Amino acid sequence: MSEERSLNFIEEIIENDLNSGKYETLITRFPPEPNGYLHIGHAKAICLNFGLTKKYGGYTNLRFDDTNPVTEKTEYVDSQQADIKWLGFEWKNELYTSDYFDSLYEYAVTLIKKGLAYVDDSTAEEIAELKGTPTEAGKDSPSRSRSIEENLDLFSRMKSGEFPDGTYTLRAKIDMASPNMIMRDPVLYRIKHAEHHRTGNKWCIYPMYDFAHGQSDSIEFITHSICTLEYVAHRELYDWLIEKLEIFPSKQYEFARLNLSYTVMSKRKLLQLVNEGVVSGWDDPRMPTISGLRRRGYTPESIREFCERIGVAKRENLIELSLLEFCVREHLNKTANRVMAVLDPIKLIITNYPEGQNEILIGENNPEAEDKGGTREIPFSNELWIEREDFMEEPAKKWFRLAPGAMVRLKHAYIVKCEDFKKDADGNVTEIYCTYIPESKSGEDTSGINVKGTIHWVSSKHARSAEIRMYDRLFTSECPDAEEGDFKDYLNSNSIEIIKQAYIEPYLANADKDARYQFIRKGYYCLDKDSTPEHLVFNRTVSLKDAWAKANK
Ligand code: ATP
Ligand code: MG
Image (cartoon, rainbow, N blue to C red):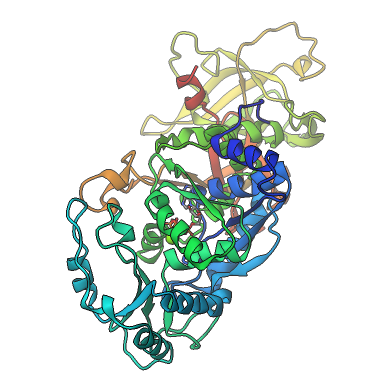
C-alpha cells in the first residue's frame, strides 16, 4: 500500500548493528501490561516491533509485563493476544515477567551481595522527602549504611511475608546526588500482599518496572528494547543494572508515542469510561481500542497503513484522527462491496410501472476492486424508498436530483421524472410521484436522455429494515488530556446517533458479520455484534467525505 520511504532512526540503528555483526539475530519484544485492552497507540508499538523483525528477520516476543498484581487480569491477557493476532502479527514466545520472579529475586540478592542494594525502612513520604530536587542533591536514608548481612536477612523476610505493605522497600544504592533523579537510589522492590493473576499468593514482594523490565529483556536476549519517550531518563538505570549484574546487554531505544486528536489514550482513562458507563464497554465503536476499531469496521490493513504513514519519530506530536479515517476509507474503497441503503426514507411511486410487477436488476459490487467484486441481484418495483434529502420542492441552482418536473437516474435502474408530490398537514413531503422511461434501463439505455444526477433507492416491498448507528468523535476537545479539569468534562454528548429504521437492500439480510459495505453515497458500514437476523444493526465505520485529503492537498 505504501510508497517507498527512507529508513526511520530505529531501522538505521538496526541496519548498523546487523551489518557490523554486533548481533546476528534481531530480537524485539512487545511488552503490554495486562491492565486493560490495547489501543491504537499500542498498535503503533506492535507494528513497529513486529514490523522490524518481519523486515530484518529474527523474532518478536510477546511479554506480558505483569508486575502489578492489583490491576492485572486474565481477561486482558486474552484480549491483548486476540488483538495482536487480528492486526496480523505472530509472536515467537508468549512470556510473562512473572515467570522471571525467581530470577529477578536472585538478581536482587546479587546486587545486595555486591553492596549495590539495601533494604530501606523509610516510608514513601520519607523517601520522597530525602530525594532532593533536580537542582539540589538528595540525602542518604539512615538505612543506606545497613550491612550486607542485615540487608540479606531483611530482604528474605520481606519475601517470606513477615512485614506488612509499605514497611520496607529494596533500593539500589547508586547516587543520591545524581542529576538524574531516577538514579537517586531507585526502589527496586515493594511489599504488596496481593494475589497475582498467575503466581497466586506465592509472592508478596513485587519488582518495580525499572527493575523488572531491563532484566527481563536481558533474560530473553532482546537486542533492541523499544519503548516510548517517557523512558529516556530511565535508560541510565536500565544500563546500570545490566552492567552491575553482568548480564546480556540489551539496549533501550525510545520513540515518540502516538497521540491522536479528540482521543484519550491511556488504559487507565479508558477503563474509567468503561466503568462509569460513558461507553458500552472496551469495544464500544467510539473507543480508540483495537477492539473498538474492529467493531467499528476498521480493517487490520488500514490500521497498519496508518502506523506506517505516521512513521517513527523522536519528538511527540498530535496526529489527526482524520488521518486514521482516511486510511480506512482508502482500504474500504478498494475492498467493500457497494450496496444501497436509505437512511432517511421517503416514498417514491412510479405511476406508469405496473403495480405487482417485479424485476431483478443486476448491480456490480465494486467498480474499484480488481475483480469488480462480482454482481448481485437487486429487486425493483413501482414503490421505492429514496432519501428525503434527494428531493427538493423548490430546487436550488445546479440541483441535479429530484424536483418537480426534474429527471434523475435511479442507480442500476431507470431514469424517472418527478410528476407530482404529496404533503402532510405540517407541510412535510410524504410521497413523490414519478414516471419512468422504460428504454432507459442501466446498461441497455436507448432513450437518448442525459441526466446529471443519480440517486440510490430500495424497493419498499423487498427492503429489509435495519438499525443504523453513526458515531462521531468521543471528545469535543482536540486534546482532552491537556485541558483544564477532568478529561471527562470534554466528552462529546452527541457522539452517537441512532437511526431506528433505515431501509436496506434484501441482499444485506445475509450480510457477513466480518464484511464491510459501502452504502452508496453514504459511507462505509459493517454489521454490529448486537445484530440478529430479525433485527439488523449496522455501524458506520466512516463517512465517504474525505475531509483530511482535502485539507492536505
Ligand atoms: P497506557 O497508559 O495506555 O496503559 P502504557 O505505556 O502504560 O500505556 P503498556 O501496556 O505498558 O501501556 O505498553 C505496552 C507497550 O506499548 C509499551 O512498549 C509502550 O511504550 C507502548 N505504547 C503504549 N502507549 C503507546 C502510544 N500511545 N504510542 C506508542 N506506543 C505506545
Ligand atoms: Mg504501563
